[in-house]
Length: 600
Ligand code: GCU
Image (tube, rainbow, N blue to C red; front, side):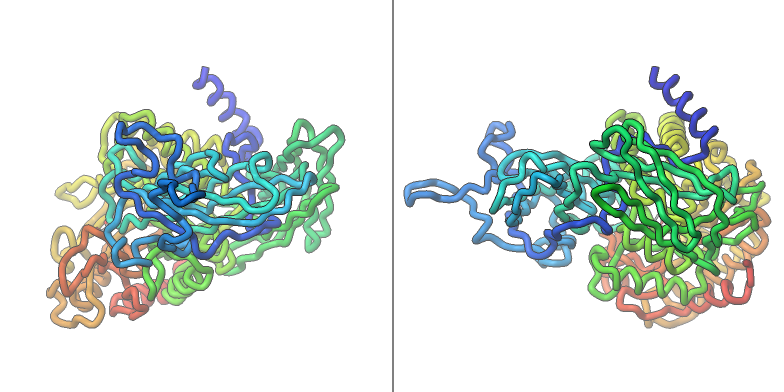
């Protein structure tokens, strides 16, 4: 039955070529523009390595856990915890870089926040989280409102019927323990930053409200704008007025069963790296107006070329982790995102690979404003439990939430479903299902994955991984001159592919400690790193199906796989810039390639 449903859905999608309006992901579109109360700031916390606040000594969930936020009422009362006198952490933020004693901590921390609220019968209230790493159990006034798994995508709960007039308190059990069946699984080459890492809002909406929408250039006709809008609690004859003033467009959309579809003729300037044009749009109902900034562009492939707005384009990119410059830890501010993106622009980039998980929405929106095309990825990283049904459901959910959040971002051109996964039947089926899901939710973007399965032949490297059949663009991670071979030998390496599809060199690079200088064959020196870049750039010039590159990586980032004292100090040193903003030699090697190569 599910197969038949998917088939019908795929058929429908291919006919309409629109992002699908019936994603079962219950997530607002464009939370930032909605009326909201921020719960960011200091939260009271209790560190609970034994989950004593959740489980009894019989390891059963206990009814009177820390989520009750109990208080002593009389001196004889026994309450062995008290949020109000406990420690505090800043939200948004990871706990590892806020407190030395939590630097290595993986486990449960309870967060509590009080807020005042005046009930209004005319409005709904939602509790929204930008992201919580990794598992979140959320309570309001001691009552469970919901759970979420996955550290990098947003989620929300309708608390309209649970919120009280006056004082309320939210308690969140956050657990970032790594488990084999999780996504990502137990080993990853980035720090497992725990906590409520992105903003928390109380979002107010009118009783009838615009929940979700998709506004894009129709894939079948670039002189047409098409899409849909979903209205919750709508009634007969409800309408939404869509306006794009700069295009003198004012369109009335009839809402049927909560859904309204539209398409109309229009000739917008197309979004591109050289002209990142965004249009102010507004959607108005009788009870609210929602605004957004939308770009219009087409993206496709033609053989081994990537085609933007009908023209071949070369992706001059860089990979980026969501590590904050200078302070390190998770990026939490727009300024930090702008700093990272500014460095990518300085490099001469028109493309960024956001690795290995969806980054915060601010980063994606700012990249779009700065004319940077985006590769966005879910953390199906290395050897997840491909045979495990729950692991698949979890991965599919993270994929759906990623697409739901960023489907209106013209800057996002690629959805990546995996990084460096081992060949095998379970893996192929797992990724095939994810790709089908991605295409059913969004047939307008390219699907990719980063592979490290290229075969070594006498005639060089050969791409033949069966996953190549399923994706639109093939990402290749290859560390010639670092994990194998000498830097000099890389320039001669030849590449071939079984697939007539674009290849992106999604990872290439080498480690270097900023300020360490020496011979070009001396590991960890800036000269060695630059030498690797020079020779790999020569290699890439000879790959005629290469459509882009995103070297590993813009900035050094924390990883518990990197303990080498006096060099790594818990940082992966493959950055072209140190975490303190110091540019290494190879930064200029890549910049020269991008500036002088004049590839688009
Ligand atoms: C891998 C992986 C990255 C990792 C990098 C490295 O290819 O995808 O997450 O950080 O190699 O080893 O530095």
